[in-house]
Length: 159
Image (tube, rainbow, N blue to C red; front, side, top):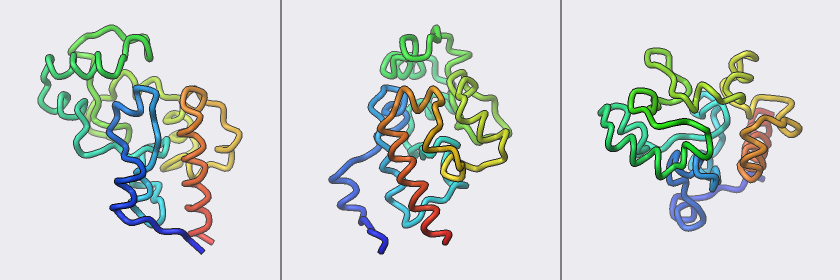
């Protein structure tokens, strides 16, 4: 039997506070719990679902150097991704976009590259997810475990 979680329980037990959480190393991917079954087409390649209020997206759309600098510092992009601040290079429009350039962090994402090469919409479709040792999973093993649980839910729903 599938367990369901309502919005109140979701908000009380854990909230993905945006890409800052992903990039800060405190990632917990509870965003998939908002839907009954994870949909690979609605997820990023790694299984994360960017929030509507993402500060880096806002800074990118507005092309606001001050807001980009704030996000860069808050998310510790220098130490986590070895990226120097350059307002022209610090931006993100998401990882599944066709009509905009890719941000420097998205370009480096090996999970994204792997999923694209194998024509997957998200990692929850990958048979090798449990044993995958991509850098993202090494940095965020808790997130990896959450995505594996998402995959189990996805597979259960398909069968």
